Amino acid sequence: MNFTATVKQELISLPLEKTCCMTSELNALTACCGSLALLGGGRVQLHYATQSAGVLRRIFTLLKQRHGISAAPRLVRLNSFGGVRQYQLRLTAEDSRTLLRSMDPQRRESAGLRGVPVRMTRRICCRRAWIRGAFLGCGTVTDPARGYRAEFVLADASRAAHLVRLLELAGVPAARIVRRGSEVVYLRQGDALVTLLGLMGASRAVFHVENVRAAGSLSGSVNRATNCDHANLSKQLSAAQRQVEQITRISLACGLTALPRELEEMARLRLSNPDAGLRELGEMTSPPLTKSGVQQRLRRIAAFAQALDGTAPHNP
Ligand SMILES: [Zn+2]
Image (cartoon, rainbow, N blue to C red; front, side, top):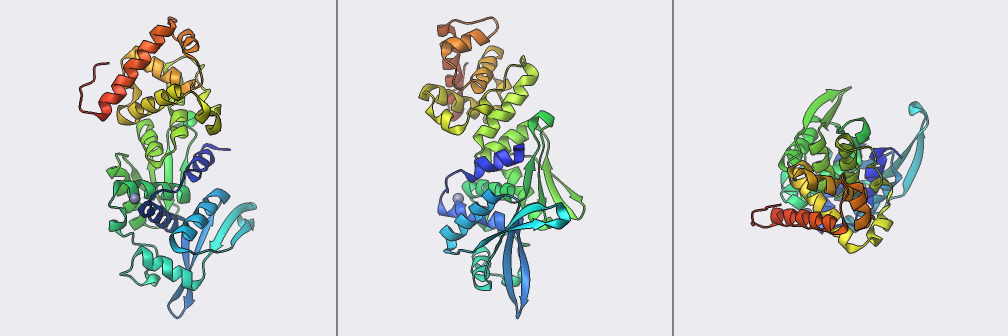
């Protein structure tokens, strides 16, 4: 599985959130992988197309949950793209109208998907959901071993401008170019990529990117966390789990390089070895540490993470 597919797999397995966010995610998916066909008489038909069965399932679930709409999915092989599989969902004219009206009650549905009502993404939670939906619909991310790059390919400038604005509000600097008639929104910087993945809820992908980044500054033995699947991870000792969460929080807030060098080393080791015991972690540091030495560093990391949340000044 390439990294894009891995990240999408993680995102579509996230539980559905609040009603407002479900609406927002569905609207983004509609804007990014939906298209309209005119049926005559001012009627339109909404049609979703994606290469991911999982993404189609997510659309299907959201349609059902939010609007009680169900439609039969189809699998099509696109001869013009070397037999690429495409999953499609076609709504009836009636359902299409219901959905488009809900996206923007003031406009005629034939106005299409161009405009994205800003009031739909006023809350932070809904903005995150919109960005996640957009990524599922039209996003890709390069394997971090080959560079830090994510991009979204959108059909028109107004949707691209909306996405750039949402990304900027979320602290992710993004740029735009036009490529082969499509609007491309992209970012290519490690910190921006980590923030993007984190705000969408792809925490395993965040660990993976942090590991790859760490491999640049530490010796090469740092790639185990990615192979640890979620089921296993959640079975780990709650202490290790909590440490990983604290470290991710630090990473998202200010980057692990904000930690003193010895704590940064410990943080990266913990991220790469979520299932290692304290003694094992101690053997991996250079020079090696005793169990209580490891414990002490982990406590300082915890204090640093706590200081990020509260107002107390941190003193790691
Ligand atoms: Zn929301």
